[in-house]
Length: 275
Image (cartoon, rainbow, N blue to C red):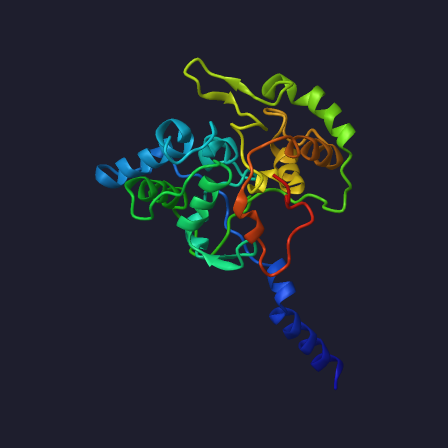
């Protein structure tokens, strides 16, 4: 075989290699549509109400939310912040396989996963006005993003999962960097109307152990890029891992169905097993 033929073989092998394809996968630019593009009529009403449901979740959906959180506590700026699990572009990537359930999940299922875990509550009916309004808002946020393509900034930033957490250092980081917003007891700060200016990080009004944010490295990825509020990317990766280990392992509601997670045996090392 000539050197040219060998080079072509390597090139085509790389092009069709799943690992290489995944690494080189193109991502769409992150662009939040201007609110002036929200249409008039029922569609626009649904989009605007969907945003309210996601930013005032426990006030507007008390029968479905078992704590005092809103969806935008984690999906910052109403789902428009890159690196904070944004909803921009999310419309066109579902249905999608998720290893936690080992199934293809619809966007409705993914939304309800958050209601049952992060919100420690109950699922919304798939055909409810509330579910459709939430979908309408996410669809509008995804305007211009090609179907099937993720955007830059989807999910959280990468974190080094080989770092070993130091909970004592995490406690010190929390005292220095987090207490002013989330308080010594982790219960956050309330607004005059009872909603939270800064959400509780543990206790009965916080997310349960089945939530992604209850996992050390998932929480660390969020913290590293987004916290302290107004001072993103100021903690080291080690500090983010340490403080995440500290607050995720404080007392919080259980999630009985956690035993059904990762049925194929690929459970991450930071998945919660205790209530």
